[in-house]
Length: 82
Image 1: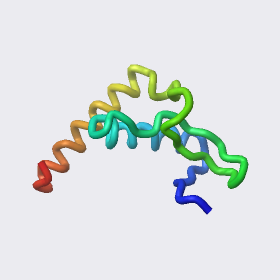
Image 2: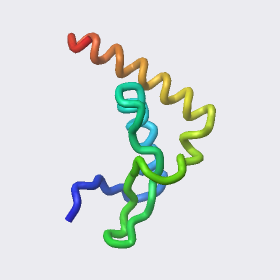
Image 3: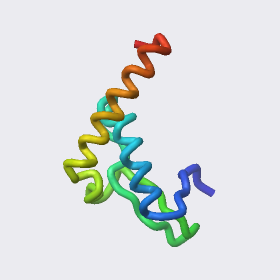
Image 4: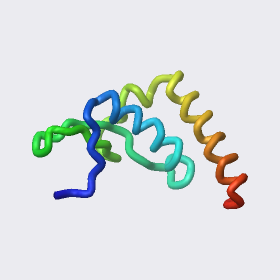
């Protein structure tokens, strides 16, 4: 059994990609970039390997990620972590 997070649908996994990009992209320059269906467990997972999801490539999604990064910054600042 792996420690991978399981998502019930591709849409749910791609929504997670957006949140994970907002959380990790600026900190490490990375984070997961794709979602895939796993034949072993029947769920979707995210991965830092493979082709970048078309969802992440859209300008609308990029704007969402930027807004979420700003929100994350202020949340951490108010918690006293910045």
